[in-house]
Length: 539
Ligand code: PEP
Ligand code: MG
Image (cartoon, rainbow, N blue to C red; front, side):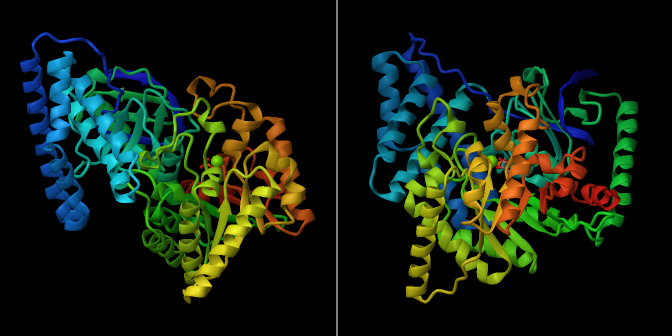
């Protein structure tokens, strides 16, 4: 058995087989080759293998999601037969002596750039498809096994790192734990693990080449370690600890249906954070009083084109209806930084966290923002929906948002479409917004403090950089003073203030937040009952 230490993101235990998620960067070298024909045979074989993989994906998708959605895999198969694409690859090998991996990657980039530059939206979206099929062939050429997620057994996901767009592809009901070589405790994978109530370890110094899918492991988020290939006795001990953890959760379930009110009578709205429609089941299961943060950008990830107004409307309507009158705060698109969608063709940036993201994209790519607002205002007629805007830094931005709201409202009215303008708030997650909170409070209905970004921008610490985890002091007095300032500004103008960043679930601070006058805490669904208990015991 091999035991390795890592940083624990969620304190729980899991036992089961691992699934090795192969997404390490493949090194593309420009090594020249001498036998061009042999290299071409390699490409042809890889393409056949890729087509076979796509065929299998198509067959499964037809059964699971229907013919229309499955058709994309057929399109990918056809693209792999395109003469222009194949000739470009073969010419690079024959005439420039390029190796197979280099030629496939270069041809993929070339064709995807051509499609990206096209005016037609549909053709433009095909750019991501070309990238996708080229990546598939490159991975086959590099000898990577294809991870089949469609029929995965309940597994511990073991990876180098996981991006938000990769996590959206995983079937959450089948994930027992996450273990990654990289990743910070503040990353979105960490947030996902907390939401799902499953152990996760990041920064584990494992050699992925020695691990293979199917191997057993024990992930102990309490001790912060993972054991690969444990003995049967160790497996049995771990399984009984899993049962003990489940028992603790059962005991906590007596908090369901109780009011979230302190001994001195201070009532808090205890809401949950979610990333997609299916997460509502965790919210209901844990008896949250509402949804304080629906990260709508996850609807935009792991796909090859923007979600249409209709798709978004259906998603928002579903969440709002399932919550049956309880508040659902949907945050508008917060894409950029670590959350990437190829089809948006965002430039690579030196400082993505300080870059073109969130409201900055919405205020400049007007159609994207308008489509989302239309879907939100239409869905608002189905329940208690509220909207909030991320990454705000100024009153001018709020004024500009209001102009969008007015324009969208006029459009919906003129068409005779049913809509409702919901309550609207902003996220306070930049030091600028904190310093302007007095003015901003006059313009909006509520504040929700995003402590993940607020801490990153206040302490000048990249939340994605694992090397800085030790410096990322979430209890830094500067951050706590800012929270107090925001609450005071909100109350001075008669609006409420909550916290939807991870700090809201930090139980060492629960009483302090109550003393500060916080009105709402929005946390991972798995933290709801524990925090309710803590608040009910607080003076
Ligand atoms: C935050 O920044 O605290 C927040 C809730 O938003 P996200 O983690 O999605 O950036
Ligand atoms: Mg944020």
